[in-house]
Length: 169
Image 1: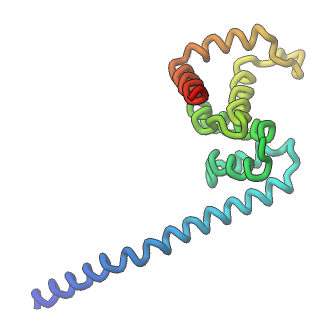
Image 2 (image 1 turned 135 degrees about the vertical axis):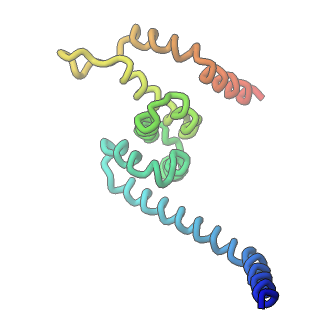
Image 3 (image 1 turned 45 degrees about the horizontal axis):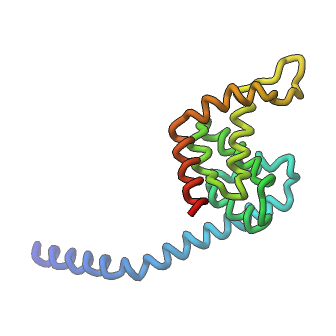
């Protein structure tokens, strides 16, 4: 009887292994279908949402689509998309609380708009407006002080050097 069980188990395992390549394309297609459905949902929400609320919209979809997926939709919908990507950079920075991770997630897509949004959010956090002037904008000295620290960061200088080198090729 044990030989029969062993033989049955062997036949069953061989059948599973043999069927796996047949099931794999369905799995891949279903993942692609889910991704397209999420992008369509996001695209529709983007069209319905006032621009002032885009950061909240991007935050809500970051986990599902990632910064790259949102940038795909933005680049498709707004070919230049620089200013449309500012709120995404802000949302990515708010989520990561790490300027390096946020910049890496944004790259230079949307003509640097997402990257710019990261910097806008980072400087906002470093240079808090005075309590008596909530509409205070950053002064040049605020930017200089914090830029010196950021520009000396090896992760930032390596990224800028790599971008400059690829642009000159």
